Length: 231
Image: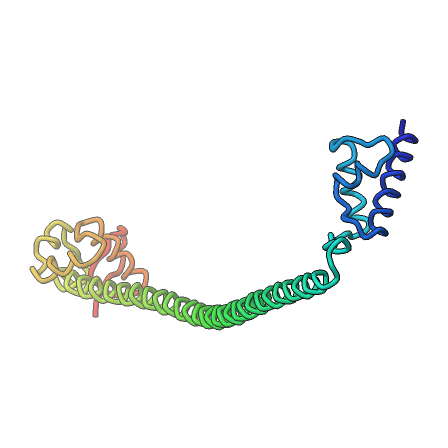
């Protein structure tokens, strides 16, 4: 079956070539009429399409049956139409080319602007990152300084409290912490509100032990009681 198809296709190709050589229009109607047994559009049409593609066929105006004067005018007119169409198409292509070039230039400018903006934003981002890091560093330093100052203020405050506590005790002696707490100045009680540790008997005892460990204000009696240090 495949062999018959190839033979039939070759016959149609040959008929098409004959029509072309005879300067006749290679159309479906002329081709079917030229075939020995004719044919149908459904069968002949696809083979004719392939032939036109293979031969790069372009229909030409058939003028052989016209008077020579008319043929000349018609050919000249056809040539003018073709040239006008080509010129119009060329102009159209040129306009499209110019539009495309303008669009490409605009795209290039937009791209350059975007890249410039991107570079600027990248540099700005680096600068802001440095500034943010510096702010964080300074904030950390400020926090350290604040905590240090708080500790210094607290130490100064409790040292002042311990000095007053020692003044309330007899040299070499002691007093109950409740009495000492009640006898502290009002300014001491007000100042204690600014610090984390409460002004109570437990805090007084802890602070007195700390001063004793550093050899300040207090010393231990033989029974282990903290008493006011002489001198």
